[in-house]
Length: 85
Image 1 (cartoon, rainbow, N blue to C red):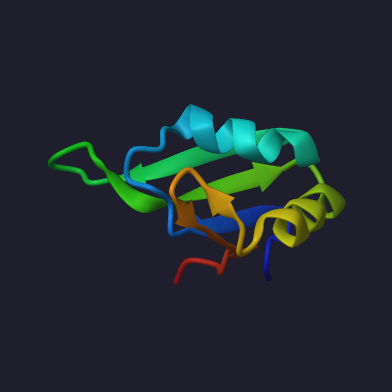
Image 2: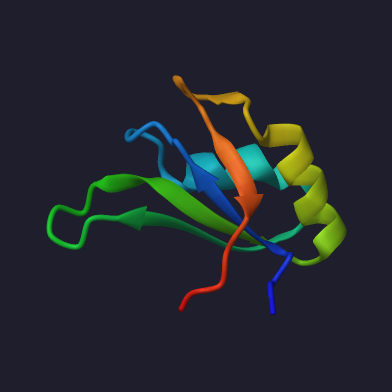
């Protein structure tokens, strides 16, 4: 089953921090988790993140508002995260 509260955010500027991502998405609802994915060896950003909202409506608003918009120096892709596996 797909968790429609969890969003995949791709195409991030490699200089963006987890706080930057959180701030960009926080206007659209209550965030319960924000995780910027980093390289295990270098600790540097891999250019994508996952943002989980408290409810589906907030996640849907954020997806609609931010998909294909510029964040930092790059255009980001926002979509419902696909389940692992």
